[in-house]
Length: 117
Image 1 (tube, rainbow, N blue to C red):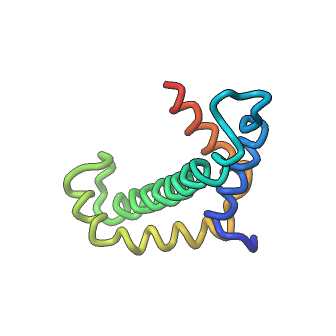
Image 2: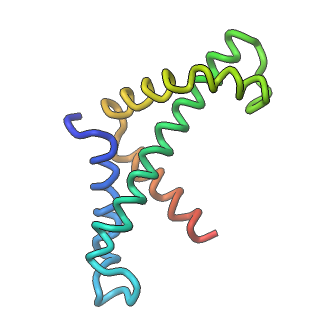
Image 3: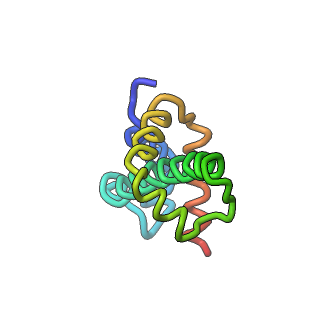
């Protein structure tokens, strides 16, 4: 893909909210919100995707190296803190190239459901 993960997340949020930001349908959302609030939400979505993939990759490596699969423990936290930049960079590179619109849409749906909780 030629566009970065951030750009694709912004576009998917704009598509999701385009119909919602019409004054005929919503008394709260306006078109100006697409550029303001929606961009911030999209960047949070991209960051969430990167963090999640980095965490999952790190857990696999930690389990292979240490043999502990207890989740986010103090030992894993210390181990991950030393290596987090590597995992985050790898995750961002992978998602920039391989994230699909369906995966991004699923993450957006999960965030919107969390808003309703």
